[in-house]
Length: 426
Image (cartoon, rainbow, N blue to C red):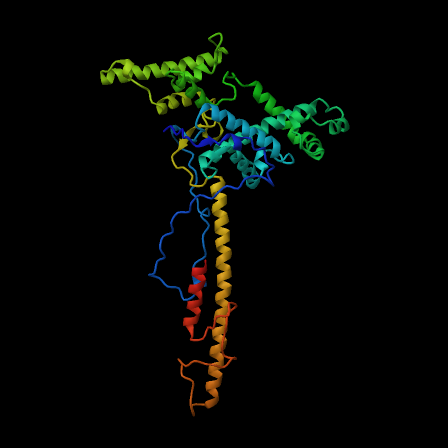
């Protein structure tokens, strides 16, 4: 189904004037999503000691694997509310990425999740955006990756002008407009010494050049995503199908002609397939063809067959928002949500370890007290008075206190009273 959600809204003008923040110092902190209400503890099973309970499991330790079988094409990601805000949002992602992304890594995949999140937080200076939402995060990460790739391509293009003299190349970084004002010369030196002169990198660049030469056609849509072109046309009162939208993006708008013959053939085939479907539906339902509408899902099926499927189950030529769904969706998504859950798991594990240490200390004190009582009772050898099991021992040597100063006399009651207080404290 189509999921276009008003997920990002601009803030007021005062907030929009906030400067870009370096990722390590001024990036705003996101608020964690409200935690779901915890289920009550089950009382049907009691453990002898709290530390005897089975270890906590991280919420991401057991995940379903993604199936390779294909199902219905669909629009997977949530997008920004309007065309205007979308353009501002994407531009801001590019500015933040170029200003803060590390250069001393070989590709966006080598940038850590923490670094990506620091950059994404800077978006909250100008936009109300939920970074907890996996779909929104995937949208942001995809555009940061694209901006990073395009930016480093410009830097490499500058290097190639001086590639004949490496010393000159090291001493001639790009202009501030390309390299960004606050970037250090050491970052440029790293690119020259470790990346641009690496044989594997050079081979990969040549392969990419050859692959681009094999590209059959371009489009005339600019930087605006596929679905946003459709939305803009509908705002102008035009009823545009997904297939019509693709055709419009592969024509010269001022001339009304196709960009090349390959694009024309594909566009006409998809249009013919949709017309045939309408004709069949009209014949079977006895309704005029003008009353037959073709669902987005069916159109995507036609487009998938004609355009093919790229990496990430992405339908070629439709951007990152239109993908082929798998029959078994993975429950794990590499997003901020997973990072937050792992942090909660680690903090909870640390708390449990501390509680176990406290329990061991308390239990050791009780055991020591019991040994002293048995030792005293054994002196009488069955003769004379004996300490009663429920008696209160007032000797300072026999009293056990924890680090809070609480007296733990009275056997096990003191132990579990102390634990109950600990539980309330947390």
